[in-house]
Length: 219
Image 1: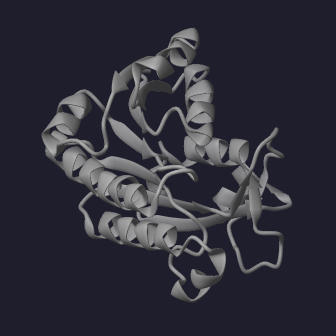
Image 2: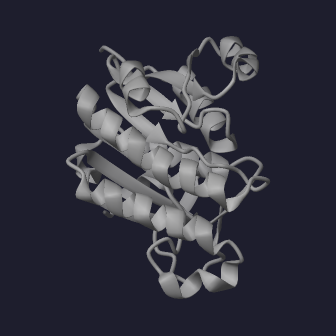
């Protein structure tokens, strides 16, 4: 079976690194790490994962050239907690939209977006203290839904470091704590990416008491 070549946008982030690690060991995927700086490359070379320098604040045409041999895209990029809200707009929103435009032009149909829980709930944004972040995620999600791409949107709750549990819930209204391990988010990405039944789906992700396989099987 030919491996699916997947471009990981935001590969040097915590979720991005986990996705690359898992895909590097998989018989089904060939990850390509999109990174901002060549200084980030040694980590991916150690994994035997190819990398490409991609600037989300650059031109769409440049993004297109990096997608011409790609079969799917995972967008897990973010401006980070230490930058200003101007970077949130240019990376989390405009960078995401430019990737959608480039994917469409390059003929890449499959697009998995890592968003955030409550991105569709304006009433919850003010209390978070990072309202511009949620505005960016909200409108990036809306742009993806309006696009012709075969999308899946994952909206994880507060992200935790450490080994995943392998157990999730996709209902943020269940009363369970609104948190999830990054490793479990990465595992969900690998599960939903090749499955056409998840196209057009948007799902919240929190820790739960059912295995990832069983919880996703109920969709």
